[in-house]
Every structure is written in structure tokens, then in C-alpha cells.
Length: 114
Length: 113
Image: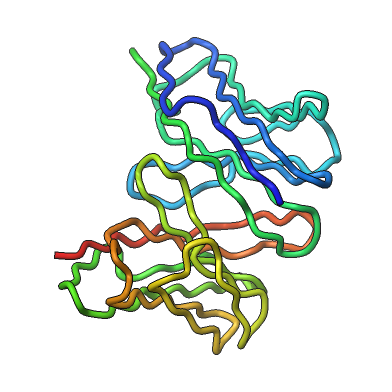
């Protein structure tokens, strides 16, 4: 079985500041890891994913995440926040293999202050 | 354009009525999923289907039913047995077999009045 923990439900940063959203996972086998973003009243959009090719994964909109097996973490970062980054962010994990189910964390709401 | 289409976007239902949410994909994906989203609880899996004419219960299947008669379609019925059906429902499908990227529709809001 796999699970994801996203600590805290809300993060607030100033525009231009570093964004750090934390995600820790639990998996009995090497996992696939994902970050998704959701804007109000919309579906989820894939930001980036880790599939064991490289531990530092770059995604869309300037986001990146680093897979750290020793810490069972996959934290999402962006060097400089923009107002348009305000949204809800979900970390998710699945087992390797075809069509495995995704298990989501509870999500973190990111607010960006002018 | 390829994608996942959910309809309707907003739906109101009276207590005791069944309602069906539509999900259609033209991405030629084998697997399809239904998630329920409630504030502060993330996404919870209701049902999923990996091939036509086959589906499995997710974590919160009680009060819901699905069918998978065609590869492109995976409708969800919210029955009167679902005690708290007001929520945001998301349909999704798998992109490929080697990375398990899941793509989502725009979601459907169901409100019981």
C-alpha cells in the first residue's frame, strides 16, 4: 500500500519569495510521484512527475521537485512566487506498473501576497 | 482536441433521486477513474476501470455505481443510498503504461437540495 502526507493545509508567501510545499510518501516498492495543481472549480493539471529517471524533476510554470529516497520526500519548490501560482497543490503516489491507482494527499492551498 | 469531457458542470438533485454524471474521453486511454473531492480531504477514489466491461470499487464506493460499456465512456451514478452526495466529482484517465500519468476532466459539482 502507498500513502502521501502533505503537512499543513495552507501556505502563504509574498510575491517573489521562495515557494516550498512539502510532501512525504510511504510505499513498499519504488514509487511514481506526482504534483498536480488545481485552480478554483477546475480539474487537476499535472505539474511534474518522478518516474526514477532523475531525482530532480523540472515541471511546468517554473516548478521543480527533488526525490529523496532517504527522507521519503518529494517537496515542490519554485524560486520566485507569482500571483498566478495561487491555487491548491496535490502530491500523489502510485506504484510502478500499468494503470496503477493514484493515492492523493489532502492538498495544500498556496496564497501569494502582493 | 483530445481530452476528457465531464457533464454537466453543475447539477442539483433532490434527496431520494438518482443522478448520473457523464465522462467521455477521446484519448484512447484504457483506464478511467472517478474521484470525489471534499474541502480538506483531498481526492478519494470512488471507482476505477482498467478495461471495458470491468471495474473495481475504490475507497468510497458505497452509494455509487458505474458502467464501462465503451472504452470512451465511464458514467457515474450517484444513488439515493449515498448519504452525503454534495461534492465535486472528478473523472480521470491514464495516459500510458510506463509513467501512469493521469489526466483529469474539469469536474462536476453536485448539490443535493
